[in-house]
Image (tube, rainbow, N blue to C red):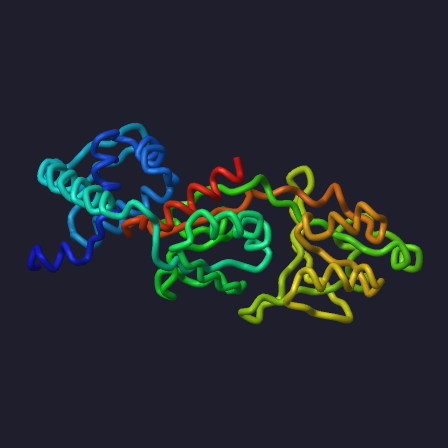
Length: 303
């Protein structure tokens, strides 16, 4: 194969990951340097080897070393990538004020939790930046769909993305009105939900959400039934307040109604916390000054 064609099949992010692994001889150490997971490093190296059709690393359970091809590639790449990095940094110096459009893909709930608190401040601070925020719950491919970044739960971020943790863990809550519980009783275990009216959630893809619970290492996934199915989680909270049934929603959406007594928790010990939300973006792209400004503000706001 023509080497030029081989290079076109690689991206700068994968080559940078390879150089970091070649330097540290460790996926974990390379991940710390690049702010990505060790599994993302492994995935990137595997993809690079497949595209080049040559093994770059010798791996065992206890050690890692470069093959002859890997050694030669690392030697040639270091000065080239160093020059490219310097060139990009010099271009950035011409843009002292972030400007342009940032397209963000996220669920409505994540936007409310992560971006809403800082939108006014960001717009005032960076008046030359236009934010184009699209809310949907499909968890689509941000690169293929033309977005600069996305926001979703950490566990759902694709391996080849760079992610920035925002906020703390996310916890779901099963909630119902006092009137509903007085009439129907309280479920003691997740399986009891089969005897209750539940307010279901449908993703934009059309799939119905199965309620997931865990306690002492025991996990339960319940396909609940009920009189109403919604695609909007705040409406699910409203429906629960009206006594229609039990809702299972992100904890923060129900806090106000829980505090004033309009809702009560059920199965609380079965509702664990999950790793929180991340703002994520493709590592193989140069990060614009506008996106970097947003990343920094999101990070500062969550610290």
